[in-house]
Image 1 (cartoon, rainbow, N blue to C red):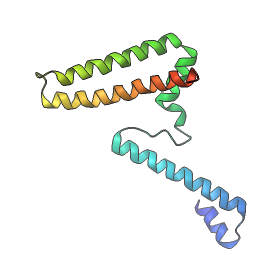
Image 2: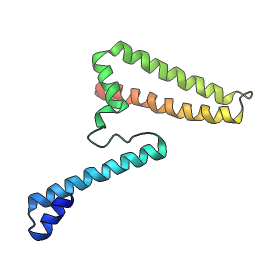
Image 3: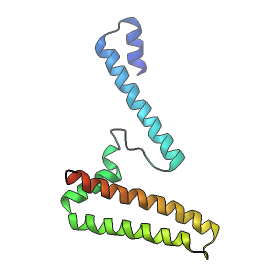
Amino acid sequence: MCEIDAIIDSKASKALVKELAELRIRNLLCFSELEALNNNGKFLYKHPLIRNYSERVQLETMFREDPDRFLDEFANARENVKRYSSFLKNKKRSPEQKDKDRQNLDKHKERKQLFIDITKQNNGN
């Protein structure tokens, strides 16, 4: 980027400006990915280098290549949502356990929603 920036200062061209803009966008995506990882412990999966590693892509591949496993994983996600919802209602659990249960419930709800979205998307709904 620094090299292109130096060239643009002396003689600008549309191609160089476009290349600089694209590099800047990728650079900003990289920093936003790292910031999200630092803050939340999760990637956003928007940068081209890690986009294909997202859970959604993995589940879509599983849906196409191993539908039985996909359905088993979907059933596990539903059961996990039920389990952690039940844990939160249990009066015997400590506040620390309930905090952890809430986090796990949120995680499994997100995963369950991914399964639902993938199923709807691939059934034309």
